[in-house]
Length: 592
Image (cartoon, rainbow, N blue to C red; front, side, top):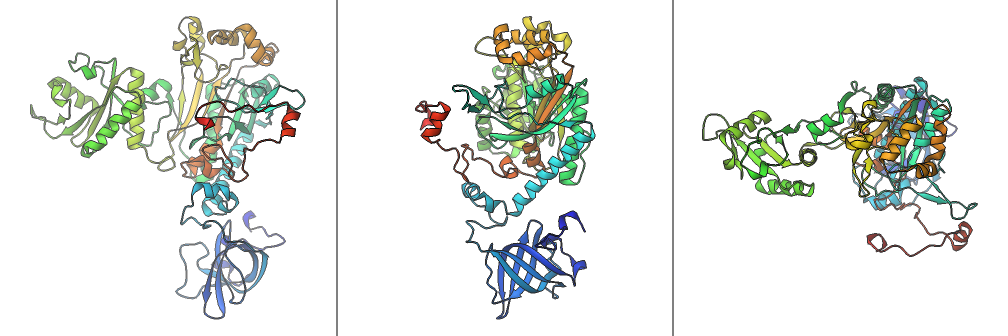
């Protein structure tokens, strides 16, 4: 007997596990009435459902059971009559006969069908989430997520990590996202912050000698919601002392591959590595989707001496859309507008045709084709390896813009849905320490300000901060960033150098991070860590485009909880107790 079929006081078996081998067994089942069908004057068929599936039961016609009633049923497993086998379900060869029924609870008709054949409107699904959760899709997804969590936890424990819970009421942290604030009743005018991550808490655990820490942590960020983001999210959070970047990636890879195997039954191959610069150069993004080709090609040298003004920018890059020459002009105009919205001045396109007219071999057709020299045409075709029937899309701009725009078009044209196709994991390493200069003239951290620069780049912090590389690394799956990590700064003087480069002076640093800097004075070991989103991983493994489908009680895109009505105003007496006065909302779209 499997653990999933362990009997309880009310039932001997689960509905979906019964098979032909159980014929002759007397069983007691519990579940919901998925369907009732009349069969003559004396008998009725009831499909009884629990989380394992559906089984057909034959009951007395006079027995009153209706859709979604909760019942217990006792009967004998028997083979279905010849010609009535249902190969579409696991229990399709058997049925339960000689049934007696006990009604455990009646039910009103549900607001939508409790199956996967028709999709209800999302607001209705979220308002009646307890009904939605009965559907096979949600049952499958949340149980898959449970297997993912269990596999992650087992992998981390097996590798010597200790599970430690960190506080939800914490101090503000510089993670770059808006935090949720919680007023203190005992300290009027003061607030806790709900953690964006346990970043500082886990670094302090390293100082405390817990050299391998992990938890599946709940984190919160007050940011706009989208397909891969909710206010609340769960992440595998880990930190390790006396470890390198490669050590951390090895630990995390083991956990991720175990989770994938637990969810899908197949273990992915070892995870490949790619530098940030290579990812941007080949795929136009630091979140490359490796399930399909269409890699970027550098054409800058091809047009180094060009007289075509459209290609005279510092960098020129291209992608080839296989068999894309058949795209209509309306689609090409749409791609051009998309390129402009992504930041490009324009988009050049060329159809590859069988003959170029000026000589043997393929040629080009398009608005700019006749302006290219014969040498430029030949070199363009050689460099892109485009064949007749293909489409070449070209962006000439700054290197950063050309990569980003073509990376966006590449995904828009070629990417399969996130959960479809092979699962292609990749580690992206060697990120820049800073991602640009802010309005205040200070560099902006690409990850967080506790990331260790490469030792050889430390002298550049003051003179050329944008050239500094960090020991940071991201894990990407099918174009989604699963998570980020880095080797941490563990020396007070190095942390002060980075704060100085960010424009954070000694007094501000002490006020905001004094507890961390103080800990560095008492023997902080070298350490590194990582965190990845369990919601995102589970969604992809479940074949879902939106993480709401793997979360039991998600919020809407506006941040509302339609089930409970949250957020709601507090009673005036509670506001007084907390020392809060509610002001009018600020002007703008959010107040309309």
